[in-house]
Image 1 (cartoon, rainbow, N blue to C red):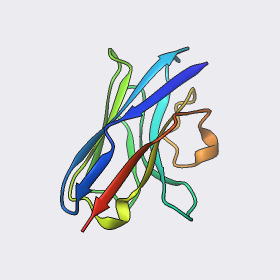
Image 2: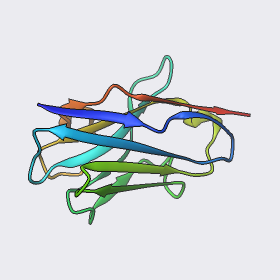
Image 3: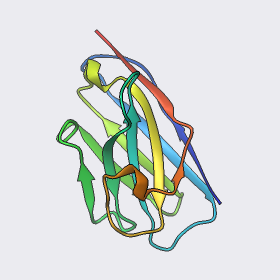
Image 4: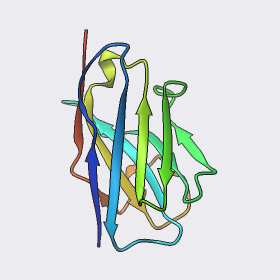
Length: 124
């Protein structure tokens, strides 16, 4: 089993920044892809960003491209999402996910393990 724990969420004003973290423990994979998804109230879970094992391949949703950066530190088994220029519509619970497959996918059902989520609230 893999355990994922997100942190770093909170309340921030529009235009502000937050850095989310996702710490992985337990069974590790040699070539796992990691990703962030989010879910706002009344909406389906949507893809935010994903990163390959090496960090050499990334994928972003159009809604966050240019405002968010996904990175990982494999020595620490931790992934980060730096979010800048936050907008009201970024308000959601943000989930970390991982898959043993190398494809940097934006599809939720490609991911086998999920964290519990961290709340991000952007106020005006």
